[in-house]
Structures are given as structure tokens and as C-alpha cells.
Image 1 (cartoon, rainbow over the protein chains, first blue to last red):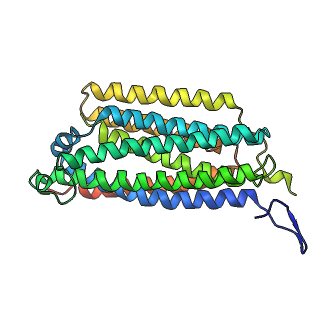
Image 2 (image 1 turned 180 degrees about the vertical axis):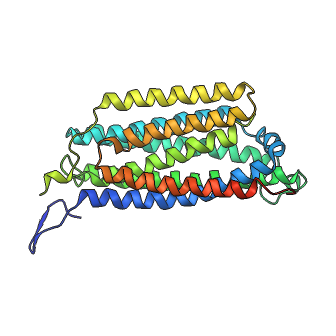
Image 3 (image 1 turned 90 degrees about the vertical axis):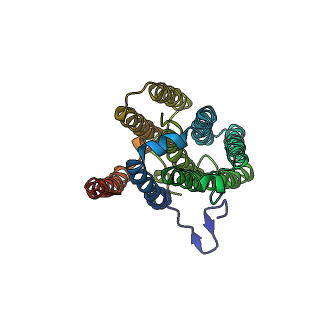
Length: 207
Length: 99
């Protein structure tokens, strides 16, 4: 989309409400995607309460807390970037967007350390150590890797998406009068945050 | 250019920071409650607090409180079907004798 709203053929149609609606509809499909896995988690936990409790001890609550704080803060910086561009402060908006990306990367670094620690302990899908555990524990770790893995993928996708928005803001495509792209990227990012808000207590706080 | 296509108004920096502080506090509460063994109440409390946090993110960060009303209706319909699914799921699984 060019920065000019007019072309040789006449007025270029623009509908910000429809753009936001489109993103919300996509977010509902994400609700189904992760929701289905939360259903799976809830049934298997209902059927294996003790095994889930034992398996959850492998997880590091401190890193989980830290990652929760990181994502919550990244949602803040994302929201602030939109207010900044609405106040015509392009530089501040770019700074907040870059901060959001940095926080996203910090989250992924933590996730990397978490996963590699478990691999080091021999706990990964299909490993002998895991397969010798109680079936409920095997289910827990299967769910853990798939759900946090898919969520991590969404964090990376979100970071790339925000990176695109940062470039568009710098180039002057996203402006005080035209920022729906940034809002839509923000909506996606906040959903990633909400998913983690539920993942955190369900995997890290079963004591 | 249709100026009325954008929000009627917007949030200032302050309210976002306030909500952020609230979210961090609620996270701390969740962790604290998890440390105390209330049994089944712990998970319920954790999910209730997670729902409150999501509500804050949805209404303030995601602008639902200042959006057109139809967006809130969209969300309520989606959540309605999600909750029905969970209720039916557990209505089924609660009555299985041997797993």
C-alpha cells in the first residue's frame, strides 16, 4: 500500500475497521488452534493428576515467571508504540517497537535454555528416559513441548511481523493518520501474550 | 481520506503503564497462591487470575473498551462456543469409569 491515498484511477479504498475485524477473525482461529490443545491438556490432567504434578517439577518456575514478565512488558511496549505514533512521535514509536522485538528475543533465549536443559537431562519426545516414565508424565511433556513450541513459533512470527512494521514506520508508511497495520500487529502480539498468560500457570505452577 | 475510520479516541501512555503494573502484580499473586497448597482451589484461583489478566489485556491493550461495540460481540460469541466445548467435554469425561 503506497503512502498516498490517491492513485491515477481515483480514491484508494481504505477501511480501518474492516482491517481490524480481519485481524480479530484471524485471532479467533488462533483461539481454536491453541484452545484445542488446552482441551487436550485439561482432559489428560484430569485423568493423570499425580503424574502431571510429578512431571511439572522438572520445569523451572523462576524462568517461567521471568518469561511471563518479559511478555507482559512487551505487550506494554507494543501498546505504547501505537500511542506514540498517534501523537505523531515517530521516533518514540520506533523505539517502543524495537524494544518489543528485543523482549521477544529475550523470551526465546530463555526458552532455548529451558529446552536444552531438558534435552541434557534426556527428556525429549521419544527419549528412553521419557518413555520409561509414567504414561501421565509422558503426556505432560508431549503437551509441554508442542504447546510451548507452537507458542514459541508464534513469538518468532510476531517478532518478524513487528520488524516489518518498524521498517514501515521508519519509511513513513505508518503515520499518525494511517496506523492500522501497527494496530493489527499489536492485536496479534497481545494474543501471543494471552496464550502465555494461560500456559504459565498450567505448566509451571502445578504444585 | 476517511478520518472517522480511526478510533474516536485513544489511550494515553499512563493507562497502559497502570495496567502493566496490575498485570505484574496479578502474576505475583498467582505465584504466591501456587506456593500455598489449597488443593483444587489453587488451579481455580490460577485460572480466575489468568482470566482477569486476559480481560485487562483485551479491554485496554487490545482497545476493546474504545472499539466499536460489534468487536466485543464477536469476542463474546467466540468465547461462548469455546466455553460450551469445554463444558460438553467434561460432561463426557467426568462419567468415564476406567481410563
